[in-house]
Length: 355
Ligand SMILES: Nc1ncnc2c1ncn2[C@@H]1O[C@H](COP(=O)(O)OP(=O)(O)OP(=O)(O)O)[C@@H](O)[C@H]1O
Image 1 (cartoon, rainbow, N blue to C red):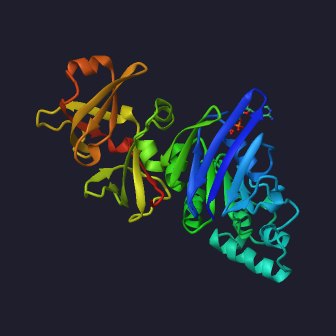
Image 2 (image 1 turned 30 degrees about the horizontal axis):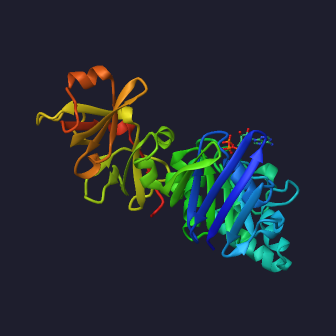
Image 3 (image 1 turned 60 degrees about the horizontal axis):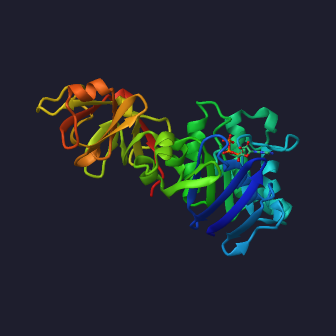
């Protein structure tokens, strides 16, 4: 059920004007800094905020003007917001019950979804007896048990502690593979990488960039997106020591807890983790994660110079931040041959959406 939306909204002195297209069954991440309008977009889609104007269709059905409960939308926010007086199973069964399912059918559907999120053992507990991560599992089951045409995720990991977040992120990645059309709001590019097929970058109420997640985040076309993303990304398949690229090179790094060997993954590291050496045939630095490249461009970036590299294999498109003095010492200019080296300890390996 694809989503098409064109929304304008005014909140005090803030105005929003966005259009979004999300193909059936895919995940769009809305990425942007605080106050850029992400929650306003979700609120308008969900029917919780009245827009100035809105055309919203899901699978050709017009939603604007419908009350929230008739939109066929599931909403998952930072906090699980479970009904405190109901057990986990009854919280999940509430969704199908509210759309007309009988008691037994609703309970069956609740247990199906509790099993999907590995929470059957929690079925009889009240929300007060659940940890934050457990409650969020139940909330995911509740959102999906409604079989929504459109799922809205509002910073779903923001309230979880750092230990719980990777498991929930992994769980969402699994259920979203075959899940409904989804809009994910986040300010964390890693969430977008893990879950989203496409991203739209919001700034000050406008979409400033959009496209396939990896493409946008690894080669941002606007300085604004580069500031948000600001990361080097190398895509491939997770292996024990890190990641193997499509051309067979291995990038060593530290896998996040939810990385599964053999599954799509990205290696992520900041530009200031990349060391640049003159290419004199001698590889210095760590022998791992060392590759030859050519300087494609040099751009001032605040107090540093950002060196953009091109080359065969994983060096292509990497950026490195150097001091002006280092750039002068190495006599770097476009076309200079260099060797790049990245310490494995600075490389994080994360699961990635498959596309
Ligand atoms: N009730 C309100 N009245 C007036 N202005 C509001 C109201 N709610 C939000 N705003 C303004 O609307 C703008 C967009 O807010 P919104 O919450 O959509 O941004 P966001 O990208 O979701 O931010 P965050 O990441 O902080 O949640 C902000 O400038 C905010 O100050």
